[in-house]
Image (tube, rainbow, N blue to C red; front, side, top):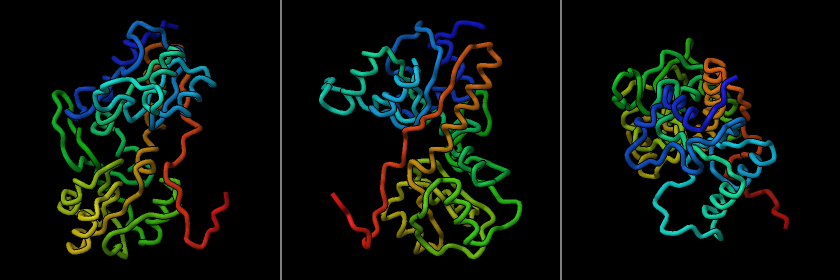
Length: 278
């Protein structure tokens, strides 16, 4: 087996999710660590949190790959009393490399939205919002796909609940009686609502839908479903594990790949009839 270094891992990721695909405002790639450090074990997750970092320590992972970057905007200081500072301190203390694979994986062919579409059972996928990238076709944010046979509104909702691992969603506009074509965007996708309408989709599934966007959908006679940021992106963890596993076999890397077990949806839904106890 070949010895794997961080730089090799970055080069491998760049093959299926080029870092050049990332949005200009994003921060991806190696954010903590050094390129020449040996990599033996990966932990994959969505958010760079201390609990996830502790899971990496517990499971013996020397490298953490998260979807969201641990350093998003420039830091004027590293205050270790803050969550961000404490995360960086712990990662450096344990010599854990931290890599972000964010909007580059969003726009990649077979990226975040493809993973969500696959969970739902959609096929014939095409980008919702095309992002041109040299040497690649089919790159872009979001996807539009169809079911082989139209689903009733209830069956479609059940499909969403199962795919996202949640018990309810917020819906703006009237849900069609039947759903055949779906536009979706894993993560925050409010800005692509009009693209979804013009794509010919019956509904649009995304997250962090703005109030004004939801009101627009209602008046435009279109249906938008907010499946939560975590719910719509979580399928990408398994996708990333599969791609890295394939890459490791191709390259002959001796690499353990773990998917996060400690991560949960960040919001808890509390019904007004529930009793809250201390």
